[in-house]
Image 1: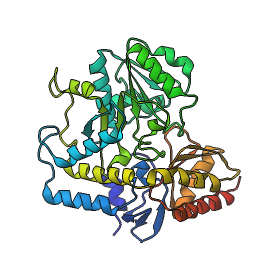
Image 2: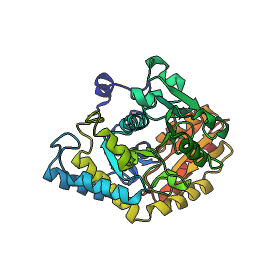
Image 3: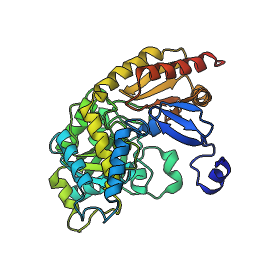
Image 4: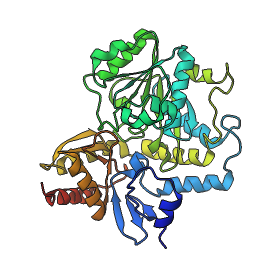
Length: 395
């Protein structure tokens, strides 16, 4: 029996026209509807399903933990092995001084915690973000969102936020001794998967060092192997003061985290005590899923294969209606000739059994962020569908 009517009647909607694909199951690189039609997934829950759908190692970790215990106490009071093991393994894979991780429930909550930590550490009020940036939808994260059309209806927001143009070193003089933090996406997501150019992040890092400002890098989309490294910033020769993560961290489970030095993170313990608190952050079942995901990413060849799969996409997706392919690894965006072609491609590919999606700001972009576990044959199958749809498009 279909839940379509109840979906529209009882579940709050996020847009006037949701895709409304009714799901029965998902496995590997495929999603299945209630009529058992298979859809090859080139989106991975918007970069969340790092190891594909229903990954056996993630499922087993969840089941084992459920059998032991679930929620027992608010975050930070009890010693729970999954959270301890996860944060210890993260510290071993991150460069110094990134060693202490605060586990929360989502990427946007991690952004909130990172901003609070920066203000607490510096005693300053000003935060600098990038134009066209997207960091989440809570009030703090929305305040550092560089998309006015998406936040105008919810003002007033947090004061003291300034915006600079990503990849423009001439605007770095806006970072001053009054700046608490600069928050940037390592690769701008909603703006069109824009990578830093000409050592831009190194220049930001240098300016932050000169002014005593903290550098926060948002790795919610690039993180966990999607760019060929565990975190995107590792491709650009810099280390942030605070790194924010989420999405692909949980293998399909809801999670977020921010990591900094012990010196910084300890500031949230006192003056005031419980400077940042959460009930369900570090949930043992979710931490177990995260741990299984992280182990698989770092102990397999998925990261290096990601770069090979990127090249396969770039080799196959050559078409007059595609202006360029942006991004790195399996964080790719097709930039079409215009928005109309983008909409046509996403909707028609769905009819042909391929899941694509849009980006928030760049209306010409088509998201390609499949699971890292996608096979070369599945990539070829999906690209064949894309080319077929584009060849049938009436210019």
